[in-house]
Length: 426
Image: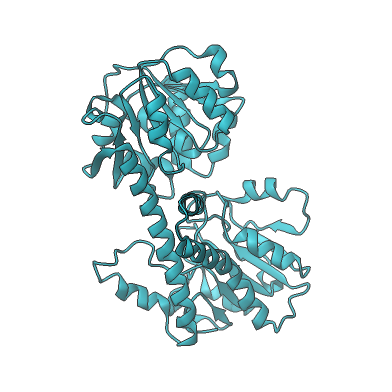
């Protein structure tokens, strides 16, 4: 249920990523008002970047209509910036130069400062030392468990907050608002929270890469990795998250975290062997489904027509950064394959990225002209319904499932070839 708050502090949010927008919308959702600074020329232009996240967009429009959101262009930050009681700065997607301009403006003030972003370990603590205020807080977004960043933000499963000064977060309106929205929050020093964030993200990346290595072994042992994953999740020591084989991980968070950790280790002359291996496995995994397709067609991929289901880096998102789609497309195009993508959420982003390439086509349905398609590659599936096996059987189209979307029962119903990641078949 939506909370209401009595606004006691003016809040300024500065950032240019989805997390900044979600943080701002979470505060308006809880009854607060914010001034939001970003690089887009207008509020409407800015929210178009996240149109695949309907709940975020709806809250954005609602906040504009109600007057709880005031949008300003960040380029004019130093010229028009009034004084606020609380600044919340999202460092990701701000250039070093722009970060420095913002921090210089805030530096002499005695206001509260909240910081978010995936940065080198110690960076947040270093920023806090140069700021005049003792009320500096670090809120890493380690709670993004939902496809919608907005839904994940308004009800975080885990909330970590770093404090420059002990026992001050409860007095900060932003921190307290989020602490009130979850029963699972933890306070510690800034550097401890920075380090914990890095550990969490890199352990997730390592677990995913190890599962994918084991999935390759499962193929050779004729074992279905989905059945193994079900058993693994019964062991409380392993946890249930990130125990799913597939094409690897994408997005911006995990790849950035591994690079930051590697840089930190090498800077201290420490071994980065495990991080190197995690990065290698993840990169190589994104090519695996193409290699399976190559083997199936005995290297005769030239001029094949391939339907690709999904392009987002995870379910329910239109973001494709780090997705296997950007590996698979060039590999197919290198053999003059005809590619058609079905992904309503990612269509706009892909259209912009590959706007000049006529080899990329889009379908309005996953089954469009399926009788003319030589193969289906599954990278993601954000639909609420399951794929219709009966329709696929009509065309006898072979399936290369990089998402391990199809269940064992669905595979048994297929009349065409199927291969997944560690399914023990194909």
